[in-house]
Each structure stands twice: as C-alpha cells, then as structure tokens.
Image 1 (tube, rainbow, N blue to C red):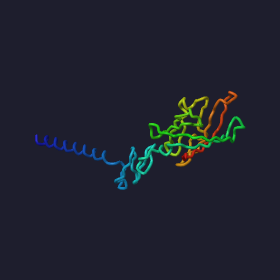
Image 2: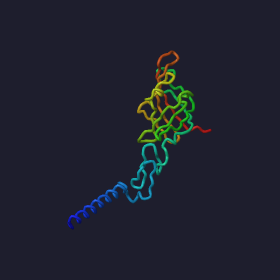
Image 3: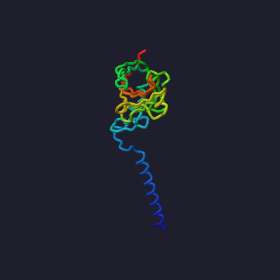
Image 4: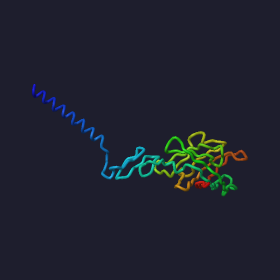
Length: 196
C-alpha cells in the first residue's frame, strides 16, 4: 500500500514537472536574445538581434508605421508616350493630378483620376511583399481591366518603383481610338507630391 501511494505521488510530481516545463518553454521567446530585452515590435513584428522584423505592410523601428502611408495624398503626374501603334503619339506629354487614398488593408491603396480621367477611380494598387517602395496595379478585377474602353497593365517587370518623393512607372494601355480601332500605348509616368 505504501509503495503504491509512493508511486502515485511520484507520478503526480512527474506530471506537474512536465506541465510546468511545457508552460515555461511555450512562454519564452523562441530565439530570444539579451539584445531583444525591452524591444517591443507592433503589428505582429518580432525581434531578432535587437531589431524588429516587420510583417508585410508595416515598417519603422517598431513596425508601427503602415507602409502605404507614404503614398497617401495628391501627386502631380507627367506622362510621356514612349511606345505606340501610332507613331505620331510617341513623345507626347500629358500633365495631370492623381489622388492616392486609403483602403481597408495595410498593403493596398486606391488611386483616383488615373490617366487624368475623373471617372477612373479606385484603381487598386498592391505593395510588393519584399519591397514596400514597389507596388503593382491590380489588373485582375474587371473594373480595372476595362473602363471606357481602356485596359491597363504594368509594363516589363510589372512593378512600379518609388521612393518617398517620386513614383516612376511604365504602364501599357489598350484603348479604342478615334478611328474605332484598338491602339496600344506604353506610357512613362513620373509622379511627384503635389505642393499647394
């Protein structure tokens, strides 16, 4: 009887020890180092070697800044036709303003007045997951692929490149021209922040 009671006590202590060990291991940071002590990373970022590693859509020292924030606002566009089915159009410039506004996600934004068309709004732009200064135009939704007989798509590698002061894009548009034929133009767009 005594040995049975002793076995039960030993089994109970063993079970408690295992449970506490699992709880301790699960509550400690995986790969944590002294350099990460006191480092707080927001928006599901994590600390590695004393610095926050941010998830797609966030940046900053503590991952507290939405990466799309740098794009919001009014941008002046200088657009040049660099390729066209109509040789007379090559080299033509246009100047207009676009408006970039917030969406519901931290990795996308909307562009209004695209191509200088006041009716062409809510063009969805998605940030590159590896580089928050690059984004792509959404050409998957019917609304963006076809509006007033215009289809659009990014040229070459598909990315639009920016820094904090310039957006540089090559875009291909296909549209019905004045002779009711389809025409394809390649546009080079330089966007700079609008100064009021």
